[in-house]
Length: 440
Image 1 (cartoon, rainbow, N blue to C red):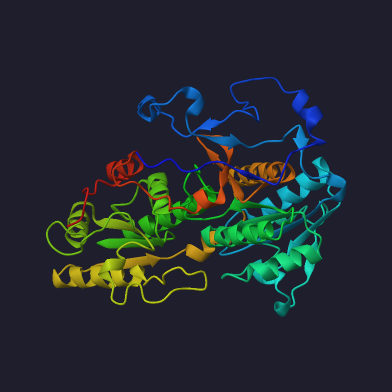
Image 2 (cartoon, rainbow, N blue to C red; image 1 turned 90 degrees about the vertical axis):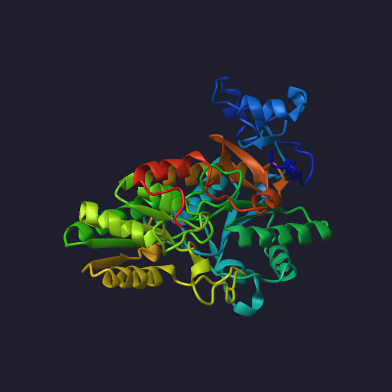
């Protein structure tokens, strides 16, 4: 069993102010969907997992539930909030911004909400970015567009300068929407705030199109991403079937985690091989990928390969050379390499083929969220506001075991969520494609 993380949530202090949400809470009835604010969402969901802890039920590890509290820390009439979006684009960013603004304004009557332009750069005076006033009217239609109306950037900035800016703007609550690098930056902001003895809540809404945040069922935008990715697989299949010995090759997003490739392939059930970073593969030999594809083409007249961008990096020259502004290792491009190797293999075997290569990555991440993700974004933003107004800080919101919970930022960036090669998702992919457990 994986070691139990510290799931305790940092609070700025005692909550003494009656929440504007209290009447709504008083009208609620207890159902199987309701989790009281003093309850916990258990970390384990199987009898074996719970039994292995060997502790009384009251001592089982659990997470603090999301939701409004009857007593809050900040006085809404004197609260000023800021929102910043960081890192790469992802479907749903504008939905989160709009949800935060509406919840702050309509439910808590917070009088000023500002947007920080262009990620963490927007806090730093040297970049010269102004802030933007956010109101329910100004965000009313932004969810129909992809991207983020606030702009974004990659890379860290000096937390001291960021907190200086928060003080100048008289900000009490900061919402950070971003990936693991952004959350590490938010942890530094929260640390600096604490060192200065300031009462500023820092709450994260984690964003990653790759779905690689631990202790979260799915990250927002993921459903939209794999839905559009499945359309690319459909196109590749049509192209492959339309030519003699045709091969469709689709490269999808997924630097370290193959969730998009797995879910998109399952949605279409047309792939003959799915390649992900978590499962190494060999190209050559009778048990390798190339021989498998040649057999499939001989049997069916065509084949489709789906590859995550981080798969097969060990096969490429100059793998792991350098890093980007966020500190991520620069990946070599597996798509063109596979296309060349597949073409050479069939040519050497005397089999004429045509390869159709599709890479929809940027088209996927820049689109508006689908209805499912839009709803998810709204609920995450509501949960983030409730947490911040109750004085929680250095934490993120997410859904775990279908319950919305508070997760310490340190836990959210402690490792990557990855496809388990021995889990039921990968088993479902193997069943769907008919590929062997390993190539090679």
